[in-house]
Amino acid sequence: MWLRSSSREERGGPPLSRQRIVEEAVALLDAEGPDRLTMRRLAERLGTGSTTLYWHVKTKDDVLDLALDAIFAAVPIPEDQEWRAGVTRLIGDWRATLLRYPWSAGLLGRPMLGPNVLARSDFLYAALIGAGVVEPHLTAAAFGLSNFVVGSALMQATWLLNADAETRDAAREHMDHQRDRYPALAAHGPLTASDDWDESFERGLTWLLDGIEATIA
Amino acid sequence: MWLRSSSREERGGPPLSRQRIVEEAVALLDAEGPDRLTMRRLAERLGTGSTTLYWHVKTKDDVLDLALDAIFAAVPIPEDQEWRAGVTRLIGDWRATLLRYPWSAGLLGRPMLGPNVLARSDFLYAALIGAGVVEPHLTAAAFGLSNFVVGSALMQATWLLNADAETRDAAREHMDHQRDRYPALAAHGPLTASDDWDESFERGLTWLLDGIEATIA
DNA sequence: CCGGTTACTGGAACAACGATCCGGTGGAGG
DNA sequence: CCTCCACCGGATCGTTGTTCCAGTAACCGG
Image (cartoon, each protein chain N blue to C red):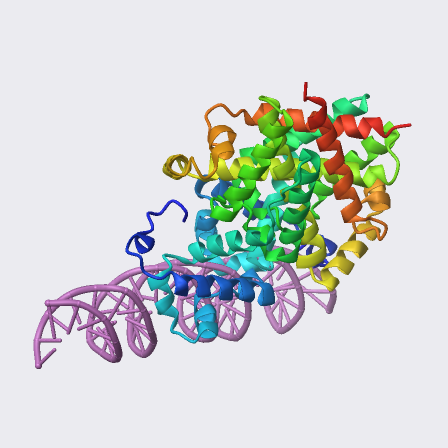
């Protein structure tokens, strides 16, 4: 998607329709989930014919790529002086956005090269460099933080947001029924009411940041 | 899927066909990717009609759930005495399996309740408990390790395995063209030839394990 | 004012998909 | 020999992403 030579902007044509399509796609994904996102349904919401969309957008995958990047505009780029505060804020807001749009979890398996994602990734690298993190720790730190937040949001969105209540209950019962086969998991695993996703996330993030900080000479 | 009361096993009927379907599905996913996995194509490979599959399997999603769980049978459950060695081995093999079947990355957004996944999750909890990790660190540790490995494999599979060479080259050129806009990212980000995914993964894993170990009284 | 280029629209249609209906078949058990 | 039942698969339905192509409306140089 982001690799296609955008022949539209070159001619100065207003990408206004494109924007409206993406906005409506996000709204539709939010309201009904990714399965219900159809070119026809999207067009109907926009009051146009379904085939008209293909003038503004090459394929449906492009709509998804654009929608995925669009939601990251809600992640502010921190201005903190202290690197740890800035990184913590960025990662936290990143996670919050992924969880606010749970359908994004299913889209994380595609290349993210949109401007919003790139700008925030650039900030992450810049913050780490500014903190004095050098290779090979730099790449490991940026990867680790990104992968950690992506994995956390993916898992939480899968269980708490995308799965409906009956699925969760059935899963709990399923685990309960096999309590003897997976004793440790049944006693302490997810789906036990006691787990606090936010707290666990921050603990893991702290471990990562401590490890990164220790590499600074 | 795992929540459906399996009326087949109850009657003692041989689930042999089911197993063949899953094996062939994994082979098909491996050979042509998830987009090309079709009930018709899968049936054709098995030498049957497409509708016959629905006798052994409720929906296509069931096939995907079964295939996803099936590949984790290749992850051995460690027998190390030392907890760090066991956890490191499990997480490493987990990652290796996810990368050997890159299509699995796109399936991670669904509830994983298969027996293979559960058994290995149970081992992870048991190993951490045996090491002396207690709540609230226990949940954070298990989540953190799982999420880290899932995120790492997802990102690497996206870029190095699922994206074809031309996509990667186009992405590199795309980044190069905007080098001034994302200076830190262009200089140090992924897609720079110097990055070593394996090394970065192990560094991040070490940071997490160090943090977990520090919580042991 | 006009002819034509250009930006944009959308009905019709196509191939492919997941899934269901329903009429089969073949062998085991009475 | 009859009956039952696990198992099979052709025909078919509704829906999907995408393309073809015949339009329309606005602008622009003459």
